[in-house]
Image (tube, rainbow, N blue to C red; front, side):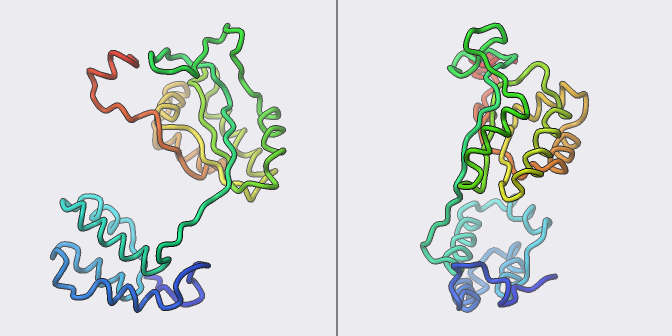
Length: 219
């Protein structure tokens, strides 16, 4: 496992964060037995792995996980907050769905429907690229734009603006792309990540009651 050596301390961290964290987490007996080994690794300055993340995700005491995360954050950064600078470019308002609550969606024949081609998107981003470090893009479920379309878009963005992180496509867009391209969701995510997609925004999956979804956004 890789240790938190001093040369890996992030800019803005408290210089004595490791001691602060150890002091905050002791005594070890104050934590549930099932996560004491994770707490110990944090005190030892060891990176947590995927299995640790799964265990914390499945831990039944959400408040304890939150308390642990709070101690890690405040030990490293105090009460400082950090922000990125981004621009929102919504690539299309054309959508195959017609959710009742959506004022953004348009049918393909609507007078104000639009679909930005890749070069049009790039030209729009070019105006902001010198001033931002992230582009945030969500849109309608376009009937013709499949996984190869977004692979081409993200590759172009990454090639021309390598410093810009790509945060794009909500969960419902990812599902739509998989259905359109007839490939599993995991493969959609892998291919888009390889093309340059950095992260997914929230949205598109907030309504978890199936009966309510059937009323306002059937399909």
